[in-house]
Image (cartoon, rainbow, N blue to C red; front, top):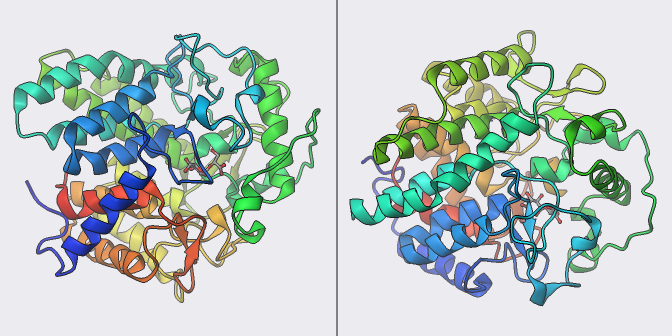
Length: 436
Ligand code: 9WN
């Protein structure tokens, strides 16, 4: 198995030790908080990333992280973006009251009513591969297989329209890049929620680094709309200003579908996603997301029926998914780098784009998970030198500012909370994991 960082940097032991300390600080036993104060519950794609870090420290702890996340799954397979910890209710807003009438399989579970990018099947594949004993790995994969399949199938069965296999994302929180300028078109509609709401996040983190109140008006308005539609896409679609094909989300689904096929093959089961299904998805992805004039992948606004003309890291996620070959991947990345001059890499939004803000959350800073996905994609495509280069630049950010949520695009200084779990977990994976 090829390692990404080979040879390891001299300070790898110190980086690993500090990363392990972050995970231990945020460990709630069965799940890991994304950060101690700002995010006190269990988040969907956070836990997927975090499990990959635990896999190298305490493999059975990674197994518990995944089991805990799957406990929040809904009857239709949807894996919610937040699984609330009863002990922490009131510490984060919005709480479960924003999501009335949810459909969790276990009625005692408190969850949100939307999902997040489905990284989990990829994470489970990588966690499994980190275990040296094939029987233990296979036994675990067999245990979680149905839950993972249901979580991917949910999107095919409940989140597609007009015969197109791409997935409709219904909320900026679902994209995981909440206040990205990609979604400004919906914020600019200026909707107001029905009920008053209170924010807690901007009392913990500087308001200048967080989404604005206008962003939150949209988030709460959409959540009200989604629950009043009983979480059903057709009813929601007729009323919403926000329904998108997100290039990042679709790319992650595609990679996870392939990784679940690999798990199935290892277990001697039929592959759940046939070559025809994957080919149709890849074809639709190219058709809907590729912008031939700009030579990049864009998101698509289903309400306005137009591509969203904002260039961000989402355009690089086809690298993670293997939706492009090695040459196209290197070309996409080279052009992204060329337009990021003066920035640490990779700024989550290109600095020449309208709405770019170097220090505000999903509007500019560098994020470890974004870099990790591009690095993994490059490694999967055999672009080892470029993967190692980006991994080195990512480690430099950590050396400068520690394991924080994100890094100011120009200076690399801390944005968001310190001791952020997935930043730590993914650096552990970069240093200890292999290309897959
Ligand atoms: C809302 C936990 C989550 C991440 C998201 C990130 C942020 C929440 C928030 O934090 O979102 O889900 O309150 O800002 O955008 O990607 O999963 O780390």
